[in-house]
Amino acid sequence: MTTAGVAMSAALIVLAGIAALAALVMLRLVVLVRSRGCVPCRLRDGVRGWRNGVVRYADGELHWMPLLGLRLRPRHAIARRGLRVSGRRRVGELWAVDCGGVTLAMSEDALTGFLAWLESAPPSAHLDTV
Image 1: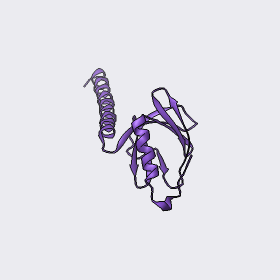
Image 2: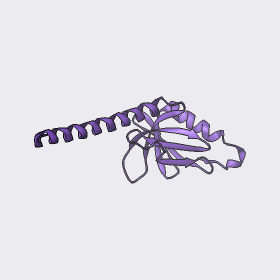
Image 3: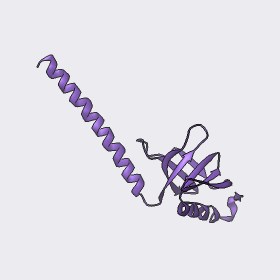
Image 4: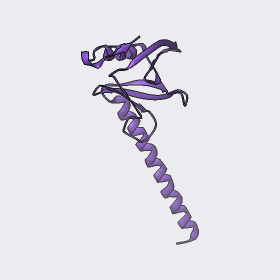
């Protein structure tokens, strides 16, 4: 095999790897968006700007996962116990709420579900909503 043939083979392997990685990211995105109980939500943690993702309610926690990436684990987990919501405001077409050191922005329907989730906590959760 010539040097040009080896270089061509290496280039094809790299392109196949990039295509496989892109396919995995897209598959993860489809699974997240279509998963039951996942709601589109943007997050800002003070360090960076708004990031797109989805939230899922699980075991007394709100799990936020970014849309793009390979990790299947949540990037942020906000516990319902003792969660303090301090302010709601309009951000474009979304509603933003400050809670647990982060700001979440979601649709009005998603905000209603989020507030219902907070209010439905067991009495021992000691919620503090403003």
